[in-house]
Image 1: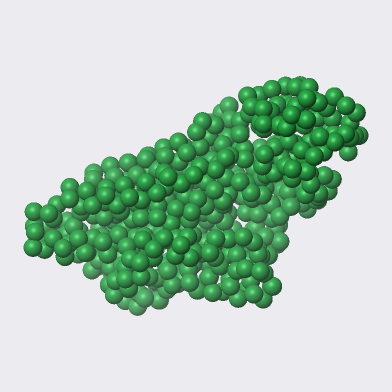
Image 2: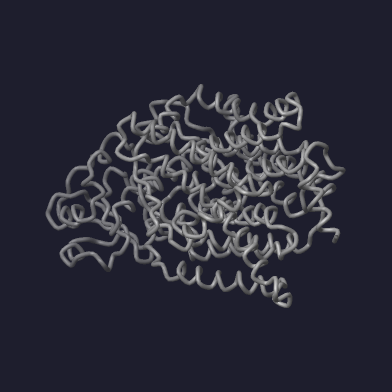
Length: 567
């Protein structure tokens, strides 16, 4: 038996006594340190604000770096080196990050649309302006439900902007979320690698799990590039981090698993708390499965893992009780139909999950999927009891379910490949496995690249026009001649910092593009307007305005005829 087979058998067989080394590899240690940095930054900023201190980005950076270093040093010292896994992990994270940045070229501004985008940007702007969180309920007139929203991703965007210098949270948030998604792809690879047996090319088939996530594209990437679910997408990183620590603890007792589970859980809660439920259910299930361990040992582990998460939840509930009303809220969410997700994902997922359920090695996949199903059922009942038109949060659970499903498919694919090459040993090589993964990637990536790129709501030119108008004009005197109503909504709330619950924002006509054009064709509109495309304005408007300032295609214009009073 090879050394790798021996290590693998020892890892999955020794469940009652800890081994001499932490059961991780170097790439996992690096990933854990990266998650620790992000989680520590979020938690430090939140706790500082909760106890009444100002959020000081430089101090938060020092604490986050110290926390990451404190995690990395012992983990790297005890971890097993695996150069192939490390190189593949870095390549996946770098490639995913580069691809996501390329998608947002050239401005690296958010590419999504909708009211959620504007609300997120408004909260980020508030944090940057004040360096504390929202504590005055009267600010709900400006920020609405965001006063109770868990602010993890907003804190991280504002902090990153301060650390990087010369940019603001608006320019930082896309890159921050893109990095969490790229790191999430790397973590999926590392988790899948644990489940792929050592007698086959583990790196190749683990990488296949990442490629498979591109089939349900609107759930894996579109959640933040199209649908503005910034907090949800970023929180998935920490939820998968929690799942990774749980997998390690399930395989072999390890003292570091519970503290990391707790830290990642705190971050997941502060970014988007909905993912906490399935991971806590999975933690309890795994603890019950390990009857060979003493009740006391399991209770101590559970206490270490759960207490900090419960504490941060209680802290948030004290100041923001309204945040928990979201469990029964309604809203638009994509139904995970085969047409939306893709038959190429659903068809192999069913036998793959059944295959995982039949094996001790992969039971953590099924445990998480069952836990997600339990919470989805509970959220469906809650939505029905509250009279919501659709089980909004229950549908959201599929966004997390795609990760264990993709990993299960990759594991099944590795077993099918091994069986298919039993009588052709020359084909049982890593290059052949990588060629198979590359073929899948070509088919999948072509579909993603061919998808139309929507016109961005937020652009640099319109931002410059808005900032000029905010500095030189009264926002009460500025109208919006934009092709997309959400561009006008963003200018009004996030750039001009106007209230949501009073004034012009209470009228949908304020942001309706056609209604705005009619106002400017007829006499009596506001004296100034911002347009995102001056050349596209109707001739009746262009012939009746003066250009005050121009920024590329965008401009601030002034009406020549008499205007309505600003209000």
